[in-house]
Image 1 (cartoon, rainbow, N blue to C red):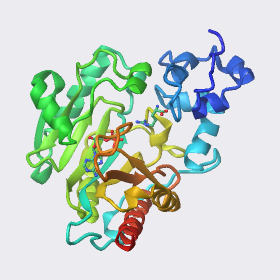
Image 2 (spheres, protein in one colour; image 1 turned 60 degrees about the vertical axis):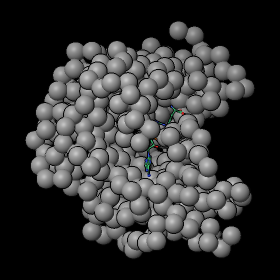
Image 3 (cartoon, protein in one colour; image 1 turned 180 degrees about the vertical axis):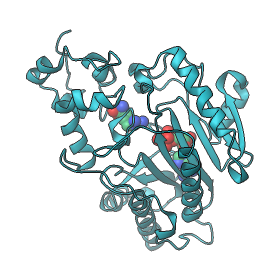
Image 4 (spheres, rainbow, N blue to C red; image 1 turned 90 degrees about the vertical axis):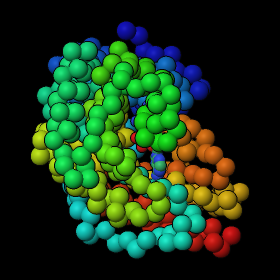
Length: 342
Ligand code: ADP
Ligand code: ARG
């Protein structure tokens, strides 16, 4: 294995931090799941436009390759290797009045967390048999949920193309063929043993075996952030009673991508901002102040449609779940005020 050829286009944190000397130190190390440096960095090498460029296959990846991961994590989250991640998953303490009672700006609200099941490798190193076992374990546990969390599991294999397209279009299902995941090995044996569980009104969903073993999602039309958070907390607790998740004192919930460590939470709104959208400098000034990310309306790496944007918390590690949602809430409040004033 040779030091990768980085071009001017390689702008990821991985290419920034992986010096030739560090590469030489790490290149022969492997985790118990036989995951080595080559696999850790492959997505960032193959996709020069990666922002981060690394994936993990187990908790051990974050330890064995810490000289690469620690500076990346510090750059992403402002979280140092001495810090501990503290969770606070309690919707009752969220300070939030409804932001958009007249439904003028916020189209929908969604909060998701990533979770991975203890004793299985993460997606980049899981084999087909383990992925199958995991799918079964997860959907069987989910099938025991009751009340407004009760629902059904739909494997990708069981859905017609038109049904999948509809679910993707309606923002309920992950897309196929993400090149970053592909290069990380996360799309191996696609589409087998992946799918989505959801309740009847699709306000509670779980993606199985996409980028992480589970993506637990609460979403609904409009801007009632508190209701969405409450349902998510209830769902996480109900699932956590049945399945043990990978977690560490230092890094919180373990995810395959270091951007999702800690809370593994992304709280977003789809918001219509026609005036602010004409002045992206002013828009970005507000999102930077409140630690927010702007995405397109078809998810990550998509463009915005019309004047509708996906605005979400950027920080996930070293702050609590309540703070993640609060970041989004305060930022969206400021965006709406700026839109009104524009
Ligand atoms: P993730 O949130 O899981 O990291 P994406 O950014 O790719 O991944 O989003 C996944 C899907 O969720 C996409 O279809 C996206 O449009 C949808 N989505 C995200 N936020 C919202 C929202 N507030 N309302 C409706 N759909 C949303
Ligand atoms: N690997 C991609 C990159 O480095 C995505 C990183 C964050 N997104 C994610 N879905 N994990 O740009």
